[in-house]
Image 1 (tube, rainbow, N blue to C red):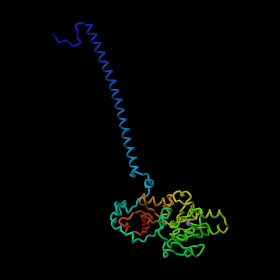
Image 2 (image 1 turned 45 degrees about the horizontal axis):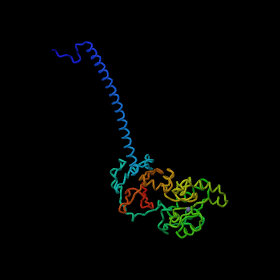
Image 3 (image 1 turned 120 degrees about the vertical axis):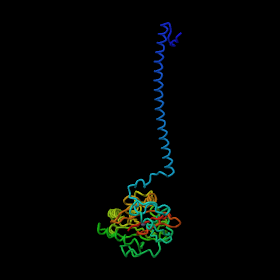
Image 4 (image 1 turned 60 degrees about the horizontal axis):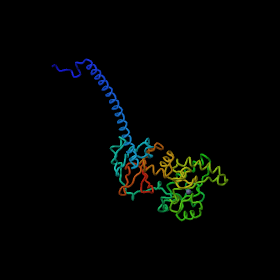
Length: 352
Ligand SMILES: [Zn+2]
C-alpha cells in the first residue's frame, strides 16, 4: 500500500471536506499570525514609550538632585557667561593658576602669581561690607582721615573723610558744578563710634540709621551730600533733581548710591538719596552696569570668581579669593589694590 497523503481519502467527499477544512485552518492560522504580529507590534511600541519615559524620569531626577546639591545652579555666573573671563590669571585652585585662557600668558603664569601674607597687605578696605550683619571692628584710624575742605566744599571745617577718597569726591563736586550748576556740600562725613551712638539714640525712626559699630560713616568712606542752593531755598524739587543727578553720575567717580529705592529689602535701609559710599571706580562701574547694590555685587564676585573690565583704555582684572593659610596670591607684574570684603574674603583689582 502506498502511503497516503494524510488528508487523502478514498472518499473524495471526505477528501474535499478535509481539504476545505485544511484551507480554512491555514487561513485561520494566517489570521492568527497577523493578529499575533499586530499585538506584538503594539506591545513593542508600548515598551519603547515606557523606556523613553523611564529615561526622561531618570534625567529629571538627576537634574533635581544636582540642583539640590549645588552642582547645577542658576547663578549670576550663568547669566554673565558672555562676560570675558580673566584672560591672564586663569582660575585659582589652591592658590595655583590652574589654566589660562590667553595663549600669550602661558609662559608667564608662574611669575604672575606672588603669594602674600594677608598680614603684610595694605588693605584699602574700599570694599569692606558694613551693614546690619557686618560690623566695623574699629573706627578708621586717625592717620587715614583728612579734612574734607582740602579738596571739596563742606559745611564746616570739622568734616573729615578717608584721605584716599578725597580727590574722587572733589571731582564729583566739580562736575556737579560745571555740568548742572549745583553747589554741593557734605552734610556728614566721618563719624566716630560715639558720635554714631548719639545720632542713633536721637532717631526715633531707625530705618535710616545704623546702630553704632555698623555705620559706614565710621569707615570714612561714606558721605552724605546735599545741594546748598536747594537747601537754602528750601526747594525740595531742586533737591530731588540734584540727588537724581548724583545717582546718575557718582559711579563715574567711584561712589555708589548705597541705599537705592529698589534695593531696600537687601540693604535693610530705607532709600537715602543723599548717602554715597566710595568703593572705587572699577567696582562702581560694574555695579552700575549690572544694576547691583553693594551686597549683591559682593555675592556676585564670590559666585563668578572674577571679571575683566576696560575703562579709559585700561583693562582691569577683578577677582575674589579666600586666603589659604593666611596667604592670597597677587599677579606679580601687575599693579593692584586689595580689599577685604568684611567676611573673610579678599577682592583683588589688578591693572597695568
Ligand atoms: Zn549717611
